[in-house]
Image (cartoon, rainbow, N blue to C red):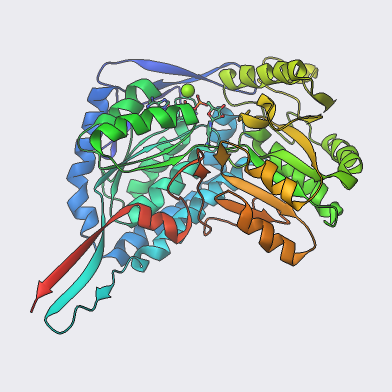
Amino acid sequence: MQERYEHFIGGAFVPPRAGRYLETRNPATGKRLAEIARGDEADVDAAVQAAASALPGWRDRRPIERGRVLLEVARRLRERQQEIAGLEVLEAGKPAWQAPFEVEIAAQYFELYGGLVNALGGETIDLGPGYHSYTRREPFGVVGVILPWNAPINQAARAAAPALAAGNVVVAKPSEFTSASLLEVASMAVECGLPAGALNVVTGTGPEAGAALVAHGGVRKVAFTGSLRAGREIAHLAADRILPVTLELGGKSPNLVFADADLEHAVPGSLRAFVTNAGQVCSAGTRLLLERGIHDCFVTALAEAMKGVRPGQMIGPMTTEAQYRKVQEYYAIAKAEGATTVAGGGLPDDPALAGGWFVLPTIYTGVRNDMRIAREEIFGPVVSVMPFADEDEAVRTANDSPYGLAAGIWTRDLARAHRVAARLEAGQVYVNEWMAGGVETPFGGYKQSGIGREKGLEALHHYTQLKCVTIRI
Ligand code: NAI
Ligand code: MG
């Protein structure tokens, strides 16, 4: 980790115009880590201009050549996997066993889109012999990408790789808590043959650098991942400019376990659904709906399995101090709402974790779907358990949420799996494995979980605009 990080603009590290810096801290210790540039309008403007200058050269390159650069980024990411993972251990508090997987997924995004560059063909439209009509999928130009702190390099690659594959250029604003890994990768990408200016990184806060990016007239599309609150603010700014946005805004995803499920897999699978990354996952399975007949034994087995999820080993701390406080507020809310704490509901007492933002994984039963702990995204390792009588009630409860990002189904009955999957209001449904899928499977929200899709071929379409050319012949 460096002492100080600057912006990465036009292929070089550039200090902030105003000379201001923000401090980052290590979530595992609470101690000061580094300084990052605190960007503002002037820095964003420099980055958008650098991107705009790089646009023609990158956009007009033969797609197969753009793909070759992205594949080289994938290769180099794997080569430097441990080093980049190390930055995320320090900045995001990721456990050392987990961080390398995040870098591997980032590499897979570059690999996937590096290979898909030629999948963006248009179509011809038959108007009879007097005309020739066809469509082209063209890049927007400068794409603004605003990122959260829970999976920094993974989510940065998820947006930047398809945007670049489609011929766009990017100005990314990482979370003010986790900027180092993307800065490192952006500079690495230039060594891989990406033109200087095609991928720029401006660091700083949301209200300053983030809002300036959305408001900049040179930005033609914005992709945002983060809170519903910030997503709404960005959508308001975008509305003024009629700016196309992709919003990925989290959820309160229901995980339905039917009595006929293979419980040997359903128990650990339902545990991983809400403790992975200490619950700091937009698609976490945080409402666990259990068929009444298995409710008690399932909860007992889940609590038993959860004993192996030790903060500081299996799971890391909350990445930000605000998030650490937020989870504790929900522990208090759960108590006030009358939920039963089966396990957790407080802070670990291990002295080795002192100073770090660690919380205990937590199971609440006796939850009603109208309680705040069933409606609001906590973003910690906390699950709210509710029983259901039958399929209809399970679907009704699952869908009774302002969110609609993911949903899970555990059953041995294939007909039921398809029937229920079709009725759930969620952008992705996992059957018999939470988070089944990969960089290839499209991802995004129903309802307030967002607009648009990331991942897979689908995302490539979201980073292009369609032109129809019709010629009288
Ligand atoms: P946030 O939504 O405030 O931050 C995400 C990104 O947006 C950061 O880069 C931030 O600087 C930027 N940002 C914030 N306000 C902005 C604005 N007005 N204009 C432009 N950019 C802006 O997330 P925060 O406050 O760190 O976390 C709060 C909650 O958000 C969490 O407790 C969790 O519930 C949710 N969250 C959801 C994520 C997801 O993957 N969907 C990821 C991170 C947080
Ligand atoms: Mg915020």
